[in-house]
Image (tube, rainbow, N blue to C red; front, side):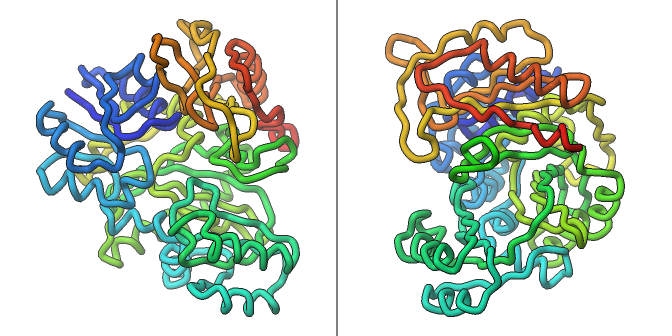
Length: 424
């Protein structure tokens, strides 16, 4: 079986590591991939948004199954393009990927189908947004409606901050076209938990829980990033929380999308806030989280191809999804200055230290091969250092130990990933 994975980050590296374990797979391609992915798959120099070229490549190489990891191509309709050519592909169609592509759509969906979430208003006129904020309770959350690499969310503690945020999102267009519309949402307090799920349009199966760390600096300070590290499972995702979410959130979302004529096939990422009133949905993503995939997929017992095929073929109810009874922690090694400005092209040493180390993973995010064949930095988030352990504390200790095995000149990381474990 030939498999093509579309994407170039740590999430795609984690997906490919899982695909490589399948006895059914003979050959893996990745478009466009990165230096680390290139050690497990054949990288193809085609961008994730070049749908025509990707479809042509899949046809020419007789690809049996394509997995789309990234949000942009999913929201842009890559699945529709592949299906139109009779190619088997894993991910939601364009009309279902809107669940992530438009925060206004997802909020309206939750309101219509009584799925617990924060109160909100949507705006396409900055003047109306500013007028609303004059009477709103602070703190408050501003969200660019469209895709913004996980960074289009501003938490504003004062009216002055909120007004500046409206200017940033809607007038200065810091997040581009994503800021043409904006959601203003009540600020919720509680523990954040991420829950990934497989969906086949009607059936949903929940993966192990995780918890991400979005802020750039220790103590949840600094700017929002794409994620500085994560752990799985979350000790705060209790049996009671799971039962509540299964009853009021998970299946309700799948049923709502089907009722809207937008059946969802692929992965739904539920970003949850565990409030005093109960769990509420913070956000939906229409694909694996990054870096959540790096701690969830290494713990999955199933053949990932079997599960994904079951989703595409509408028979997910026949799969017994199971995970190892252990834990995993991922610490992101970033380029100092991320997410604003940082140097690229710096040589990385020590990658060979991960060879043959059971339970340790070095997922490449922002890397490439230099002209002389060396692996160098090529992004803000460079590597996801992941380790498993019998429990979260052991996994955390293992992951931080492994961060010392690899070096590059402007290496930066948070030192408190999973610190919340101590409070559980």
